[in-house]
Image (cartoon, rainbow, N blue to C red; front, side, top):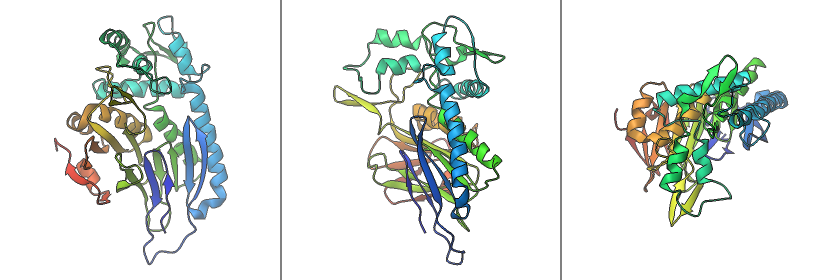
Length: 346
């Protein structure tokens, strides 16, 4: 039995049951929209009668966090924080405060490759319907880069403050992962022990989908998104996230620029087609997949050695290559479309 669920960057499926295993009902999935993307909750078939309960609790958690952290909602805590930049502190909910704390931690860990104050640069490049006709000028880039510095985020008690007018926080590189972790904890609190939560490719699992099986993810081929490059086995409780430039980008003067900005230069990151990270928590996987895409394999290896996370780097060249950390090798089954290499620095 093979179950597949299509998501923006990775595909989930339950591994084949062994010949001697008991045949179980197929896993059940509920899908809905949340935080600007497709969300799904999956339970083993034996727990099908609890899928509505798991979906409702997950919807509740994600809806609450979106209301707090979305930059697209003018009434969110983050939007209020951005409006008050340079004016004064504002009280923020506990979860938003925690995500800001984590954001500063990963800013320090990655030497600024992960920086949630990148909002001014994202607006300058205007990824979306209103795309720029040309590369931003050096002057404009310098002006907006001066507003980007995660270390300036001030947190005191339950308040947050951006000290410079024009600064703005965008939690898009970590909020979805954090939301998955909170929904995961809520489902565990319901007494569920085996399930999978997927928020736009930010995934965390618990238990297994059936007897003698494990949750697995397939790594999408960034050069042909209808195919995959390999399959990763996920240990119970672990999470996975991917970042890539093959779905959101702009073309300027014939050159493609991906949507992931390097906060240190002001330009979109280049050199990689995709990064997939496996970590103990979804927030960690989310933040690292973004920052490792910016850092690249060699600098990324230095960061990974300070964590327990594992990663797959896919350089932006064909034929596809998968540069992997040692711990990934025992979890990865290659689909035959890409060469596997040990990540430089190991």
